[in-house]
Length: 124
Image (cartoon, rainbow, N blue to C red; front, top):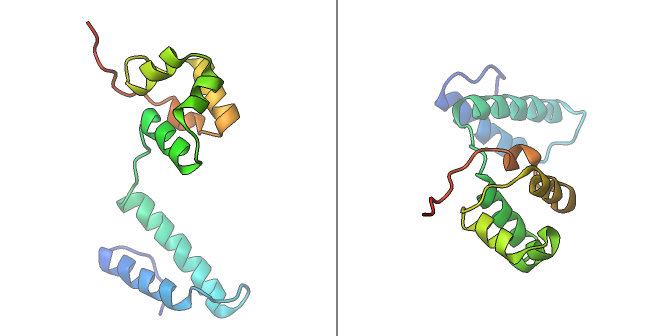
């Protein structure tokens, strides 16, 4: 395959097919170099044409807990209050800076995701 910029969806699909063919190429070989260049081109094309939106903070917290075998009780221990955790997860209370710091420092959640605005449930 002649390596060239990915300008169309067809170019993108061709690059993906070529990556699949040479996926096991050894580094520092002509095929390994082609693989490295193609994956870079694909990453750029995807970032420009198929961006993936970051999850909202609550979805990110829930995914993080589930994927690591943690429970909501673990959040109770970390944040100190069952009521606070429940209000946050039910979207009745926004994350504050102290909570964001704890989630980032102790659970490794991205601060960039946690600081995003997200809708809260209106309570009357």
